[in-house]
Image (cartoon, rainbow over all chains, first blue to last red; front, side, top):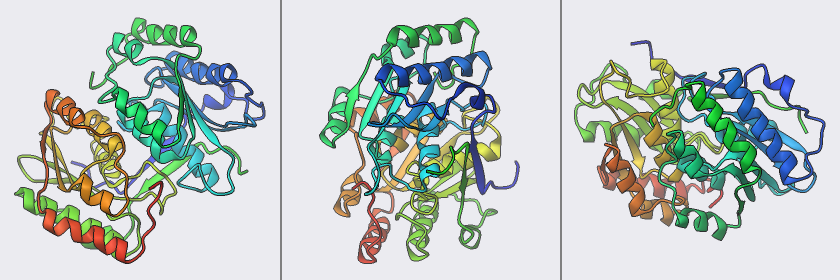
Length: 191
Length: 191
């Protein structure tokens, strides 16, 4: 066995710079979801990992704060779902463990697919005030991705703490990326 | 705002090397929990972050694979609970996104306090086959740490997928560390 690890690195693949326009304002839910889905699609096409992309954006201005793609296989780290990478990089950029700091604008997470149990928990800790997803749990299950212990009460728990949740945005564009991943025989881990 | 972040680093504080004996076999649940609690205590005393420590260990040999301490405040990253850090560093060491790889021994997570919703989800993805915790959800709530949407069904969900769960190990040693944190007015984030 290798010596004990004291450090791990979380990084975006280089191609992300080609796909993302950081200077654009993403005004509508559809604009934002379009980017999250494009990240998921490119992650499949470039064989970066699972078919999932996410962004953190300022809710009112539409300014893009961070992006994430599923990096589980690429970085050998089961925690690096697209949403988690987006949260980590948003907090890194802002130098804060919460996106709900006193002087901050309201932030939201936009993700190409309904979050798993881990990412839903992280959504609560992140400080985002709104969660928007595209494809649903059932869509992910159809390609054998398990979403973990998420229940109707889980959503109520977040809503009771002030997080607004909207699902199914551009679902008809999000689902084909999941199907593309299956067609290309992408690895389904712990499924 | 700073330019977009493309990388984040996950690291242990330097003092961990003074506290952990990597060559010892941690034979019993109590041996293992003793280390997890000591990590939690040192994290409070050295003001590293929240009062939580965790380890990944080979279930049968007792060989220590990785350790983690809550690093949310230190690294400005809401996802870095002790359990998450332990999973990331175990997978980094083994070079695998799962701790249940075909040639691997069985791994378990031992954590000083019952996992939150995020960490329970990650437990499922990590590949550990056993979860052992010390203090409980109610103990954490008493110092205002929210555990998120975890329900009785959440545990059944993990158990149905082959993960054995044992709680309350050395609880009477784990709880005083939570109280110590409160006495020292440690920050409770998103509480």
